[in-house]
Length: 135
Length: 294
Image (cartoon, each protein chain N blue to C red):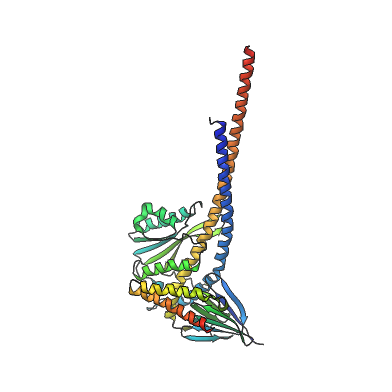
């Protein structure tokens, strides 16, 4: 019998996904990693990227996350994402608008800390668009 | 004695007031349901966050490289009070009970010789505190026009708090909000968020079957990244509870108002009928005595 992994994706606003799957690929800050059933307990931070959910040997779901962290326990994998949505629902235009706003923030920043912060969020959004561009 | 016409006008005006309060009650009831739903939907995240944080802080406690958000600055001289209230009134004692709690805490802290800074979230709290504690208010974050509280709103508040903390503007932060118990009962609550109150031993942390977590990146780094998020989640939770409490308070306040208006209408109608009777009787007596005199 093939073991299944209990996978939960939670955002602050709601529980987005809860399913029994074969494998999940998580975009960790120190590189992507796959989680299979029986994975060692881990806590890892994640960076903006795409979560890939595999079941029956095929990718069944691709979801975008903006950051947060993943927790692996013997009971399963839980991803706490600050923002997450299925890749199919993503609206390129809205992210482009957010990037434009973020870039403006970089220009308008009054001091170094503010600028660094704005640059960081602009960088995140650029990554998002890059990912979107690939799909 | 008011004339019949005056009474009639008053009855009419009370009736229209009653209509308004009734409508507000129903609006609050439907908003309450929505607010409760979003508060419930936010629970899983907060729960898991608590669990992970509890596990991490237990491991980090007492270590020197523990993040300052967890251990605090080591002093408790300057207190930041984040007072969360509603944007609008007409919700019974909701705003004033939160403000009262914040005020008594402020006075207690001042009496101990501590310094107090107040960050208001929501206009009503600022308006109420400005009168006597105005000089302690450092900033106000308004939520006007926010129809449904999202995580972004919590992030705005959190960013402000973290900014202040980074500047070393305070040592201890406490948030004030109304915990939602039921539609008729909301409890004003103070919750300390910085430094993080340590969870009780073995409190809800995940059962790892004897194994320990692998951390990637390192424990301290993860904690560094998670603590601001945890703060945002705590604030988000408080905002949601507050929103539900506000609607609950408004609903019961408007229910009372509707009932009072009903009582008032009954009373006025009774007076109206009595004075109408009196006028008729008086007229009859006049006619009869006039006829007898002839």
